[in-house]
Image (cartoon, rainbow over all chains, first blue to last red; front, side, top):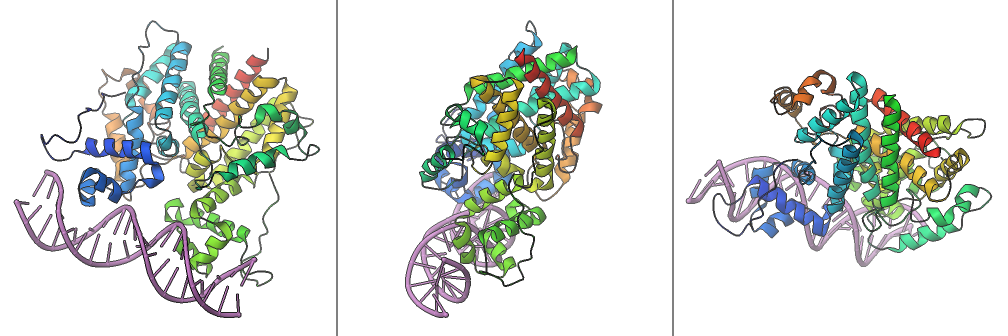
Length: 236
Length: 236
DNA sequence: ACCTGAACACCGTTCAAGT
DNA sequence: ACCTGAACACCGTTCAAGT
């Protein structure tokens, strides 16, 4: 999904002082370390040893920078060759690669889920996914729906997996949440009570750790299998 | 999913001057009208005719307010009774209800996708979804995975559907994107070129309008059917 | 308890000016 | 073209003080 960015440090003074890719790269690293809400044009500029306007000149507005950083995450993915591979194995493999890339930059997941549905620069992904699904037997409207099914599943599901609780400083809400969950009325929440041991900290809306600290590997694999089985059923 | 908030205007002076629910409600309406990025404690306070600190006193920090507003969106949903209904019909119906609720407040979709995976206050949803899936035949780990599959799909997929492009002011990037898309090299993007008419503005990463202006109804129904078919296949 | 009023330390963006 | 330096109009949050 695009060539790797050059890894050279910003120290060497060859070429122009700053490039757009440099700024995006620095922003990515900054967000990885300090979190998305800590990112500001001023602090990033300070860390890069320039004035805020230098950044604006290269990347435009802040939200444009963030969008560029989000798109940058998926560029690390190198898609496997789709020939000599069953369509379902290829889809599953690509799903795992996307998830891995997103897990490598968990602080960016909010902006990936909420901006990447509408974007350019991922055309190689589209091209090959469409090609594979077409060869699987989908065509016309069904092809578009199949594409949207798996693409929406991957990006959307992992976004939710990596979602975090309220960005409050203290971690006490976790203990409070756990206590509240365990002390629900068994008469009004019988199914929840029955499966409490399985649910707590393992399922959406009943967990307190995000998918960053507590990856939902097995659930993802199961959900992925559901996609494949469902698509296969639609083909017949 | 919880009782409706009282609809009384903030004008009447009965009881205390302000309540937490009032602030959340006002914030929800504000975001619906002006967008999420326009929300600030100061402007919301001004619109409510109070000082910023009055808001802080009731809802704490801004990110806590936003989390509360996000959770508030799903509280409008009234779950259908799950008895006298096949499990798959119930799941499909609830999926459509969740989607409808999210579409009613599209400006909140980023924060729903990125925060609602870890939250309380949705226990009625969990209870009944788990109950239905259990009656469908899932148990133990498979039950949790089935729950995570459909919950992650609904919230994640619709988040992606409602995702919008860069929050830039001018709408020219849309025309530029469309032109760039239509003028790709057919030799390097054959599948994309073959299906251009179907893809453009209809599929993730090849559309310029968000799911707010351009709902992906058919693709959602197709994806939902894939979930059902896949889950059904796993049951046997 | 609930809110005012002022203050602190930020922030994104713009604009003229330099080179 | 690329960046400095200063300025403008904000922002979230805190703190003392009122009632």
